[in-house]
Amino acid sequence: MDGSDAPGAGQRPAGKSRFDDIYDQPDPRAYFTRLAPLGYEIPHHAQAVFRRAAAERAAVPDGAPGRPAVLDLCCSYGINAALLNHDVTLAELYAHYTAPGAADLTTEELAARDREFYAKRRRPDARPVIGLDIAGRAVGYARAVGLLDAGFTDNLEAGPPGPALSTALADVGLITLTGGGSYVTERTFGALLSRPLRHPVWVSAFVLRTVSYAAVAETLAARGLHTAADASRTYPQRAFTDAAERDFAVAAVRALGADPAGREAAGRFHTVLYESREPGPAPAVP
Image 1 (tube, rainbow, N blue to C red):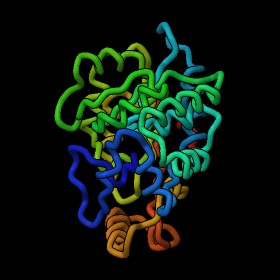
Image 2: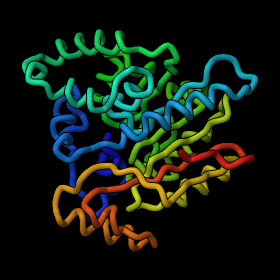
Image 3: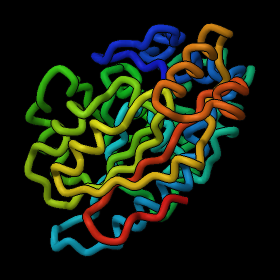
Image 4: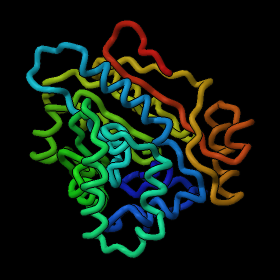
């Protein structure tokens, strides 16, 4: 999901464009078609980061049985899971879902094609992935084509995880996020880490510079996680839809004490990567 515009319990900041109509469709075609002209690219930047984080987390012995799963927060149609576990690029996914032939398929035909598409590209080091998003049809599609091992629609901004999600969370070792920090707050992270967990949990989150991550970092710190970020390195997310959205972003970044020159002022949302792990040497931010 394009976290800068994601629907959810959090309030949409004034000045932000809405894309609610593409987030809970029966399949991802409208999502990719609508975001392609805006150059939505943050999953591309996250691909290598999440693969590295998942491999490093899996390599840490913790005495618990089984491989630690990845929880993709605001998972939408399973795009981060596709890029994590398959030999495919974001550019190839854009081409796959916006090709002329794709538009003629029914959702059932597209899903059948996708199951074969992803199965052929499955990596030998694929990690178990759990998806969480309030967009039920998007989560269902990701499950149907094999991108998610489990999927949930619990709204953790509004309440605690239900019994099924609570059970699944016990297997999580890494939480990933690409942009949804505009809408999921410390309430969601607190709820995710409030249940007994078999594995120590790390967090890798790409967060728009228009919002503060401080409250989330404080919540993670209260649960034993140290958060590191290199604020001088940013990752572009997408182009602005209009001048009003650009003006909003520039003002929001300045209000947080950062400089929008060459980034938001140049026409694109930018994110910062925050990595949270147990106390010890600060995690390296690539």
